[in-house]
Amino acid sequence: MDSVSDQQAMAVRLERVIKAPIDKVWAYVGSERGIKEWIGPKEFRAELGGEVFIDTVHEGGHYHIRGKVVTYDPPNELAFTWNEQEVGKDPWPVDTTLRIVLTAVAGGTRVSLIHEGFEKLPAALAREQYEGYQRGWEYLNDLDKLAATIEGMVD
Image 1 (cartoon, rainbow, N blue to C red):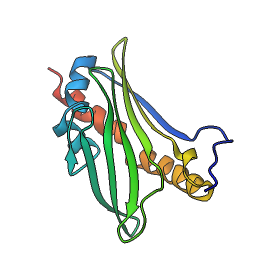
Image 2 (tube, one colour):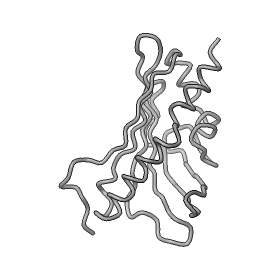
Image 3 (cartoon, rainbow, N blue to C red):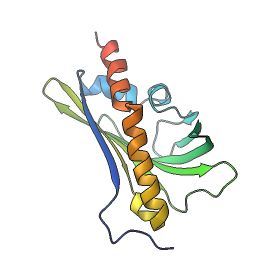
């Protein structure tokens, strides 16, 4: 299996400052309810080793995404593995990782969404999936949706 490990790491990175304190942002993104509303998994256990399962239909395909929480560090970071499988086909041969990092900044909290590890996939799949997820995360405006939700909850 050829990978692109000799190339620079492939990571989708999006950032947004949310006008809310870090504890308020974590209370949402670090919770089962918050992650389900924001990213949409059917199953998510907000704890180290917790299961993640997403069942989605997009671009004419039906996909399952499975993973496990690998970092649960309130109120700073949540990370889980991400392995996509188009229903009826083989899953990715290796996992990528979705990380959500919170940093307190003047006026609120910087939220960094980092989807990394695409270079570990076989070379042709790595480039295709990296580019697809780059477009997908940007198109979905996930951080704009998150900001609107949390800022609407701030007292």
